[in-house]
Image 1 (cartoon, rainbow, N blue to C red):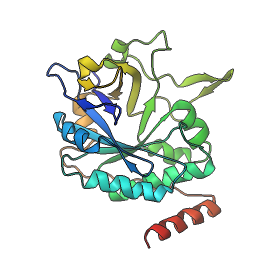
Image 2: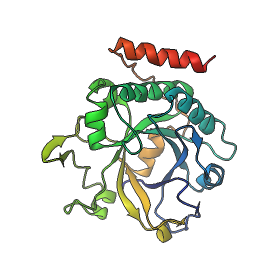
Image 3: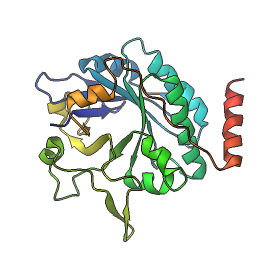
Image 4: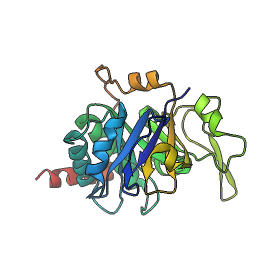
Length: 263
């Protein structure tokens, strides 16, 4: 059975996990853009209800990426209420203008998190954003090494059921249709770590207060696999490969932003 978990943000007023709830991990939004999540303190205290704890930041193309990194890394490394074993950069088109530049900003964000956070570091997106907004500009080899939290809700997919997802008999569909065109996710098939398989989890069943539906996810493995993957036993993370940024103009701009915010 795959490890099962939820993710939530300020839109959940509170989380009191029922004893019988099937929740092995939780992912808390700590920040968005240059803002701390409005329920950061409350939700941080609730995170200790599960052993496997992760956090995510909603990336914004409208503000400097390095300032977002500094906010996020401070919130996850210096949280007085809990500790996290993994962090994610939420990279999606809502409220954003995703371009070549933002793809490189995503890469730098990941690279700096890998230096500043002692745990797993990955990215969240849907299939089309990954294919057309990240893989189109970045090295496939480098991207394939970045843990992927993939958003593919099964509600429109008639041949996949929730039990298939939980039992591990179904994978996220790699092919999809956009504007009459058939595309495939630009990543080796089956190479995913978390799958956000529905946005319609039952709040009463999962203990979420103040929402009509909850995002639900599975890990690509069992609970024991997840604990080993997150290195909860204290095993050091292996060093990640470096990204070669071929666009010298963008790389220079990114370095200037870092120098500006470092004073």
